[in-house]
Every structure is written in C-alpha cells, then in structure tokens.
Image (cartoon, rainbow, N blue to C red; front, side, top):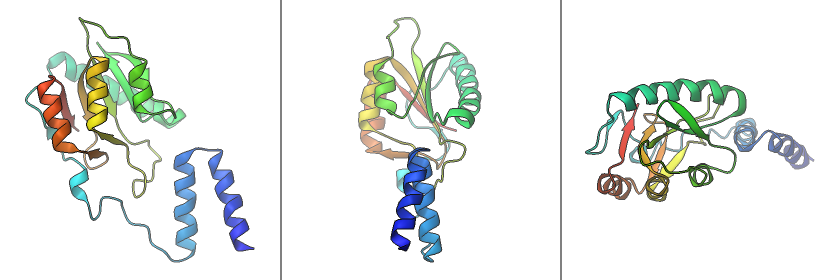
Length: 180
C-alpha cells in the first residue's frame, strides 16, 4: 500500500516538472532513512571553479552583458524555472525551456556583428544534490553553430562532460568559457 502512496506523490510532482520529481524522490528516500548526497561529492572534477578556462576572455561589453544576463536569469528562474539564456549586446535573445539547451540554441539566428553569450545557472529552488545543469562537448559545438562567443557557468554548480575536449574546441572556435 505504501508503494501506491509513493506513486501518487511522484505523479503529483510530475505535474510540476522534473525538479519537483527529483525533490519528491529525495523526500521518499529520506523517509526510508536513505541519505542522498551530492552527485559531485565523489566526482568533483565534473564541475569547474571560478575563472576563465579558455584563451579568449570576455571584453568589457561582454562583462556588462554577462552581468545583465545573470541578473535577468535570477529574476526569470524564480518565476518560470529558466536555467539558461542567451544574451546578445545586453538583450536576451533566447530563454531555455523544458526542451533544453540544444533546442534553445537551434532557435538563435546568427549575427555577424553581434555574437551571443550562453549563461547556464541552476534554478533557484533546484536540489543540487541530484540535479545540476549540464553542458558538454556537444553543447560547445552547438554554441559554435549558433554564433555564441561565450559560455558562463556557476562555480561548482554545473556539470561539464568531456571538459578538456569542450575547452579545446572552444579555444579553436574562439569561444570563451568562464565560471562565476
């Protein structure tokens, strides 16, 4: 009977999105005295610390755009759970939806004069033990296709798969990767 009760709870959480499902699963496990630890506890190399990881660094205008984008992302994700956006010349040109980063990047129209910056941070209420925003080599390739000139991540709060391959590709394609 308890199993049915758990299923009902998970179905209710499903209506609120993937983060809610993970939170409910963690609560259920806690009720069974199972402690959930952070996904990077044993793999800290999957995350990045503050700094710039590429030869190319953001310029003064990029930094202004990044700061505006981070502020906007903070406001957006408290309302509709956005964890990524692209900002170009201080204007938000794309917001990530439940469809993910790849789909968002596919919607961007390239501009020769202005290249965008991808900012990907965790949602405000995201449980970082089991749910971290993730990018990888394929994301960096998608950024190059979309005309993105930079990627901004949150220190110790993003997973970066194929990190060295992604950073090498970014260097070859003049994309900066910084961590705040």
